[in-house]
Amino acid sequence: MVLVTSVRDYINRMLQDISGMKVLILDSETVSNVSIVYSQSELLQKEVFLVEMIDSISVSKESMSHLKAVYFIRPTSENIQKLRYQLANPRFGEYHLFFSNLLKDTQIHILADSDEQEVVQQVQEYYADFVAGDPYHFTLNMASNHLYMIPAVVDPSGLQRFSDRVVDGIAAVFLALKRRPVIRYQRTSDTAKRIAQETAKLMYQHESALFDFRRTESSPLLLVIDRRDDPVTPLLNQWTYQAMVHELIGLQDNKVDLKAIGSLSKDQQVEVVLSSEQDAFFKSNMYENFGDIGMNIKRMVDDFQQVAKSNQNIQTVEDMARFVDNYPEYKKMQGNVSKHVTLVTEMSKLVEARKLMMVSQTEQDLACNGGQGAAYEAVTDLLSNESVSDIDRLRLVMLYALRYEKENPVQLMQLFNKLASRSPKYKPGLVQFLLKQAGMEKRTGDLFGNRDLLNIARNMARGLKGVENVYTQHQPLLFQTMESITRGRLRDVDYPFVGDHFQQGRPQEVVIFMVGGTTYEESRSVALQNATNSGIRFILGGSAVLNSKRFLKDLEEAQRISRSGSHMV
Image (tube, rainbow, N blue to C red; front, side, top):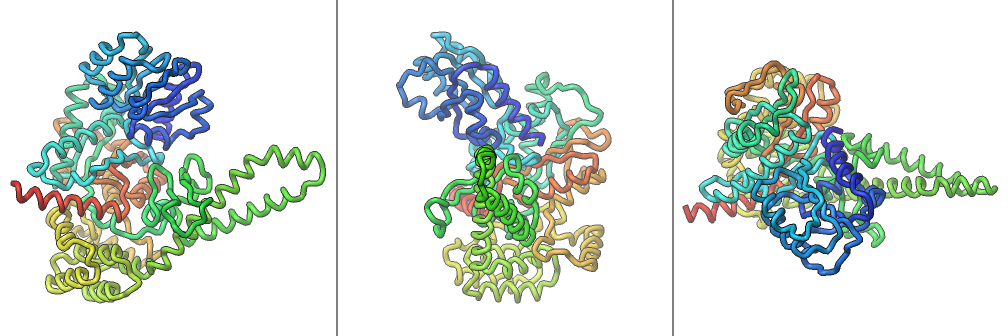
């Protein structure tokens, strides 16, 4: 609840203290921050009759002096310039300016100088500079997410922009939580180290007074890690509801765009909301596996049919009055049933068409079980299978290469060649580029559970016990990291502290930020870990929320820039 609640509180405070008719003005980033936690009807209840983007406000000349303008924007130099122009030619009666992060003194002076007509009523900082999709999961929705893979020498200004945005996002999260953390980072990642050091500089030097909150018994922990330490998780097919929707159809700011599905009728091609805050069925099923969801949806359809049947039986005036009273709830239930049935039906079709159960079984074997010879046979067979799509072939070869990078170079080369002949649209060298970025030499954690004695024993025990579901046996590396933190075993040599601020005892709050993006499989791991009541509350954040398509797109973009950069350097 924690992050969703803090963003909602900020928006409530922004809107309820300003009486009368309002226009809410957002930018391309804060529109996601607001829309994911606040519905259109809730805005109307707060007398917000218009929502505009700061760009379109600049273009329009129409005066609306009867409206009070409430701006909620990021404190970027572009936004300050747009505001400057808009304050010089005010269209609204009053201006209330709220920024999602720290304003510089120079920016405040610019705004003061621009307000010649004295229309600005207040300037505030409300730290909601992140998208709180789930109670313990946030993202920064960074478009240029691939930059974390680029060496600093190739694009220094791009990497600086990336780092600055991440530091801003992390700072906002801790200001919203009213905490100052002890900071650790993954030793093998230059980008994680840089972000951790710049965050520490902001919190302990530049803005030390702002972050000087009441001391708690133990400081919270911020751990900055790199996506490349676990490249397996974003490459796998998913079989739990939320993760599966994102993998097969796409989930952006808790919305699913059904227009992308050509087989649906026109009236079904809409955008639907999948939010644990607004949808009770989704809340109780988002982490369930695909087989169970089918059963639960059938139960929901049966319940709805009962309600529909009782509504047909209207005989008295009292029945009619009751039907009218319950009609909004009935329509909502109808919409919800239709939404979930549509999603599950579409995903079932895709699973069948792409033979994903067969593909996924091999993926899970590659991620969780040993046996190089059998794995080579299985991947070779699937590469020859006409029903297997290009993206699935590429992912299988990548998973095989990550697992058996050093074991049989000849067979690995044969798979590369076979992939190139079967799926020509994929650039040659993409698998090799992944190994260069996230191969064995580059990783800190025990990704396949075969380096550490404890992990080897755990894998053997799991094999003996049997797995309840062959499609969901994989656990992200993040699960091990959380376990290490809970047991006080996160090694200083692998995850050093920044500066001289060390952990006293076990932290009660941990924010893990993943440079390069998180997955819904990992956010599920965090939610399940928090449900165990271990005494530590984990929050997961990242620069983007990945599915395999996005992870591969970032990889291709980084490869393209690295190639052009290496010619220049």
